[in-house]
Length: 220
Image (cartoon, rainbow, N blue to C red; front, side):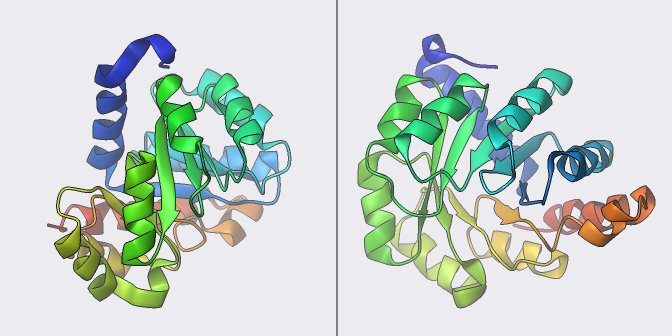
C-alpha cells in the first residue's frame, strides 16, 4: 500500500490501476461475511480494486482485513462524508476515498496521505467544484438519472477529467458509458449478486461479475 511519502508518482500509479480495471465494484452489503464472500468471488473473476462503503457495519476494520488478505489489490472507502471517517479509513490502509458529494478538505487530506480522492458530482457546476477542490476522479452520481448521454456531455466540457459514473449501471450498459467518455464505471447491486452470495452459489456470483469485465473490454 502507499503512504504519504509516495507523492504524486505513487498517486498517479494508483489512478492508473483504477482506470485499467474500468469497472469499480462498490460493495454495499449487509455484513462483513457477505462482503468478504463478494471480494473472494470478484477476485477470482479478475478484479483487483474494490470499494467498501461506510454503510457496511464495521467498514473500517473490514477495509483493513481485505488490505491484509489481498496484498495484490487496492481497497477504497466509499460513502465517506466527513474528514474523520476519511482519516480512519486511510489509517486502515484505504488507497482511495469516495464521497457521494463534495466534502470540503477531503481531496487535500487524501493528497497529503498519498491517496486518491473520488468526489461525487452530477451537474457541470458540481463537477467544476470537485475539480477545483482537487478531486483525482469525479464520481458522476447517480449515473442512471442522466445515462451515457449525460456523461458524454460532461466529458465534452471537461476533457481529460476522469469521470466515474456510478449507480444503476448493469453489465449491458458498461460499454456505452465507457464509449461516452467515462474513464471507468462504478457498479454495486447490479454487479454483486447478493442473492447468490447468500445462498453460497459462487458460480452464479462469478458469472455475473465476469459479464461486467467482458463488456468493459468492448468499451472505447
